Length: 185
Image: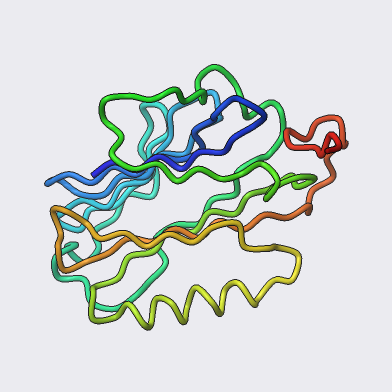
């Protein structure tokens, strides 16, 4: 399974995040920086963050198939400034992506940050996952929910992965550096 989380800006589509699931594990890539970066959770429980050719925070966790409960795997703060949207993040279709989540730019007008949270749950704990996602959404009034996605996994059929996307204006960024600015009707 491969999912692309994208945002429309006028007539252009930009890919922000990709999720790839294979027999080897679950991989989530964040786009926009100068280097390729992803987090991975391998079938055997090995987890790490990779930026370019460097591995960081490598450790052994519960193997995916043995995971029980709902838990947050990763949090990332994505910039909604012009410097993060470039030729590398343009999306015009490919032969690998099976599903696309396309955000309307109006959901992020005037915002400088998109908070991405990635979750894993076994199917029996999906209710707990929904509770945790709602609790997180209520915890910070500066952020508003842009999208929530829960998807079954193909290679780990007893599990689901989820994303929450929340937007805010929380950094000291000049208005002319924002990617998504209302231009009138």
